[in-house]
Structure formats: C-alpha cells, structure tokens
Length: 323
Image 1: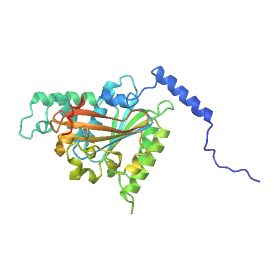
Image 2: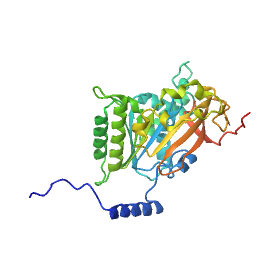
Image 3: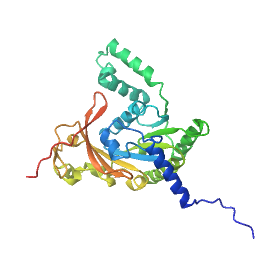
Image 4: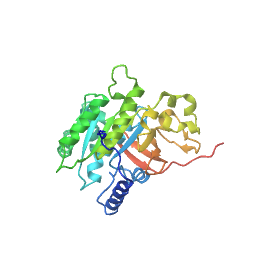
C-alpha cells in the first residue's frame, strides 16, 4: 500500500514551548521589542506598543481622526524606535500621498493645511523652506506606498513580493503595513463587502503568521452609531462597541487589538457615557480599547490639534453625577 504523501501540518507541543521561551528571553534581554507608539497609555494598554506578527484594527466615523492616528504612528515610529530595523508599506487608497505629505508638513511647521496650500496666498518663504528641509529628512526613511486599489488576492501577492524583495541575509525585515481603509479593497465579481472583509481578515491572519508584520488597518463604523438615541447624554450607547466596527464579525476575530475611536463633541454629546465624562469641545477624542488580546481593555482620551494633525494624550475628563 502506498504511503500518503500529504505534507505534515502539525508540530509538537514541545516546539511551541521552546518558541515561547525564546521569545520571553528575547523580550527580557531587550532583543525583541514591541513598536512604541507616541502615546504612553496606548503602549500601556498593549504589550508596551504594537507587537510584530500582529493585527491592530482602528474603527471610527469619518472625520474622527483614524488617519491622523495612523499617520502619527508612522511619522514618529523611526524616532521613537531608534536602533530598530523596520520598513513601512502603506496601502493608501483614500488619500493621495501628496495630501499625506502636506499633513506631515502641517504637523512639523505647526500651521494648518489650508495655510500651507496658500489658500489665501499667505504661505511664507520661511515656512516653505521648513517643508523642504523636513522632506529631505523624511525621504531617508524606508516607507513605500501602494496607491492603486487591489483585491484581496492582489493584497496578498503584493505583500509577499514586498517581503521577499526586502529579505536581508535570508531573514525577513520587520514591516509595518497599513491599510486606509478596509472597504476600499476591491471586491471580486458578485462578491459582497462582508465576504471581501472575511477574506481580508483571513489573509491578514495568514500573512502575520508567516512574516514579521505589524498590520494597522482602518475601518469605518456601521450606520447605527449615528442613531439619535446613541447621541443622548450619559447613555452607554455613546460608547463605541465591537459590533459597531464595519464587518465586525469578519475582522474582529482576526485582530489582536481593536480600537474604537469617537469624537463626542462632534455629535454634541456633553456628558459622555454612563460616567458622564464632561466633554468641553469637539477636539476631545475617546479611544476605546475593545479588544487587547495581550493587554487591557480601557478608555483613553486625547486632545486633537487638527492644525498640526497631532493627537496628544490627556487625563480622563472629570465626570458629573446623573441628576
């Protein structure tokens, strides 16, 4: 009788324990590190930042600051993680790289996007020169961009080709991969958005297991977040929950960290959630850590400086008792 030729797909429990101990030893000795983000509370909620071989999902309404968070992580990554070798590959289908670059200049120069575009003919030569100098520094960083929308299959093929292209002495290079945002992946013929998102989640899980990748994927929220009753003061419905994430069933199960971002002031919520956090203006953002596979669930608050495209951590706002 001919023996089966199926490739063995299992490994022993011993292999898993050996790998885990090597990982713990590397973490203890500082050889293996997470990717630090610009925010202490974000790092604290996770494993001191974003681990490699992981998938972080950030969901929020349009205009709430998802892209600003992603951009700030990338913008500051090479400064905060000095000595670490990694690359960045961005799938940017919603915003032209020209726009992204000008947003970076805005953060660096401390002037608005509108001012830098000389909407009223006011951009000074001094500030333009600052943009030139900043660009000279930024282009030294290994960041690449995919602007043409792709299908899930093309997403996989592009990443596999990229990882192989940047092999270093037979070892894959740590890579941050961003996608802005999930629904902009092209659907196949007669393929529903939910089926596409399910395939995307499976693809990300397969890729993060094979390569040292930290995925940061942005997602919209479902329409029910906009229901009037959810925007009434002091309601639990003010909070973003897992089911609000577009394609939640398809993506949440694959994600290691899930963040729901909200901007209560933009919805005219003055007392946020059952705790009644006092929201003074529409620059206050609430970041709900909905799933932290290796960390802690919590709410963190930020103040958004939209002129500089920068988010700064703040203490939780004071609360008011229900009257």
